[in-house]
Image (cartoon, rainbow, N blue to C red):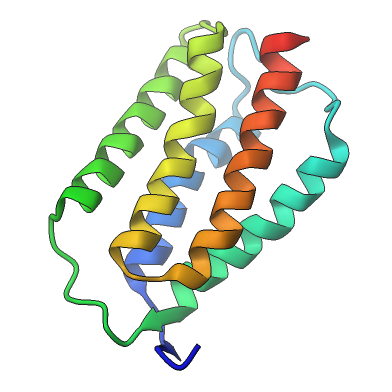
Amino acid sequence: MRKYRISFDIWGLLLFLLVMIPNFIWFAVPAPRDVLRTGSATEFLDTVASVCQVLFAGALCMLANKERGVLGLTPLIRCCIGCGALYYGGWILYYLGFTNPLVILLLTVPPCLAFLLFAVARKNFAAVIPAAIFSVCHLIYGVVNFIIL
């Protein structure tokens, strides 16, 4: 932890908010075939995911690696942006009424990858571990609740 300092990272907050915007819309405006508004068969993993989400979001926004460079359009950041585009595409498909496994995976995998790629690009390895755990839990949640069941 000697390589880290407490420092606000506006880019980490911006990424988190950009990923959360479709969720805020979804809370307020139900989709036509809103399969996501059902009970969960993975409640324990959902709790673990929520805790890890708070941890990685806090680390992305409040911890800075002293060795990180200026944020630029590196390949990792470009992939992060691509993941965001896929995620938004998944939400568009979901609101058009598509609820197939591909759409569920688009709502699950790309945002997780975006967080992981951003954390690696910013050399914020304190955020990588909770983001990775969140990603695994979020993927299991999506697959178990909306693809298998």
